[in-house]
Figure 1 (cartoon, chains in turn brown, blue):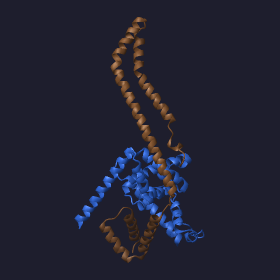
Figure 2 (figure 1 turned 180 degrees about the vertical axis):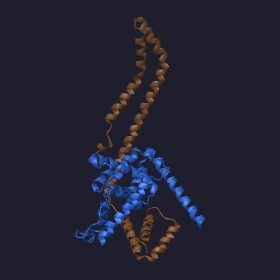
Figure 3 (figure 1 turned 120 degrees about the vertical axis):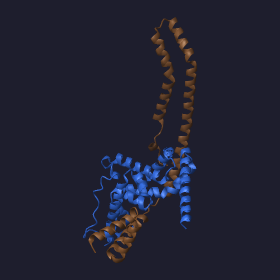
Figure 4 (figure 1 turned 180 degrees about the horizontal axis):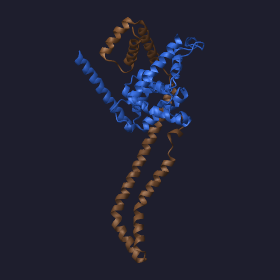
Length: 160
Length: 202
């Protein structure tokens, strides 16, 4: 029997385990195996190898699982609380924006009036008006930055 | 008979889809009961995968905790359209790579297959044979040691294919590698492992 046939049979044996082979290839392989003890031994060797890989186990300490559960619960509670606070912050930002829109004409008139009374050039009080508009966003960004810098990272938690 | 088998397969697939969606909903809500259930169910498999990738029990224990925290934090990214296992193992794998990068930047790409060319040779005559090792250790430790001699990228695909029974597509997803690379790693890894085990027994 030619060496190529053995090589082909061994390729098929591995392929059958890795990705599957067609019925025709399976039939050819079975016929070949009946006649070839060498390839039969190779098939057994492959089966033993896969059996060994399958049999590997890594014993897990139940205390580790329990500690993981506690840590996950703690972090879940922390994230839920954080979400609730963020929700409140976004509500406040939204409300601030609505009030800003509603009060914009009044503020414009007020700044115009003050500008005329104290003889401030128009570009100055227009800039003041724009600055007033971005104040809520600046405050929200500052709060978020401050919160992020204070939030404990996952790695900082002590192992429970 | 075929119709019954088809019906059975469909109902299994349907039930798995419902299950994946239930997990996705639970993770979006950060439901502690769902997380408890997932930890209970996947604890051994995840730990075995981590231990296999890192080759260290202590590291695997640390990453085990980190993986579940990451699952909690990134739970909203799981859409429930595919099985949960590949998503879980992908998270674990990313944590292993991050750790490798922090600890040994020059070995950062171990899982990307850069060491694939360095397959171990079966032990030569004169060196302690695997038979002698078997005499000293239990078979399990011996197989672990043989697996540990393979490059991490080969260990990973062997574990995912033969322990987790993942499909080649799922393995490609977890390993972030093309299907052809996964197949090649499986063939080469399987043959290297066979030679290590059988060579030692000879």
